Length: 182
Image 1 (tube, one colour):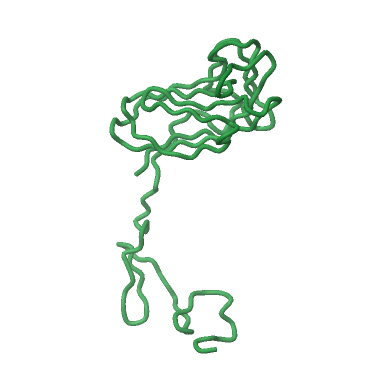
Image 2 (cartoon, one colour):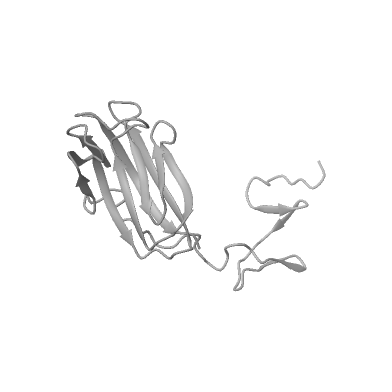
């Protein structure tokens, strides 16, 4: 086969010839007789700003999160377990983030795992954006929004698309993240 070599399983080959690439300042990669570039992301610009959610991975238990309504929140297998004590509207856990830049785009991520009722879990945002995600329809949230105010409320609720959770209903939440898109 044209351009083949006996060991091309490793490395970079162009037309069968090995190429050694070395990133240099400015994002250009020298090659045989020329330069490829600029290389996207080579100036070490992160695609996202710093994490804005306090303890969204629950590495510190439920620190940074507030129980709302008749709700119990606790750490269970590295995730936040939110349990409704009664069919109370708004039962869940919340956190408020401030310092968002109006007009800027933010990435939001969250993972929800249903507990004892398949559709009892809702992840919501209010303030800088208004978004709501139901566990049955979108258990893994990964979307963007444009901030309309400097404050964002995050809610992890025990609710379905049509009802609030009854006593004992629960859902797990994990990997909650809000970061500015650079």
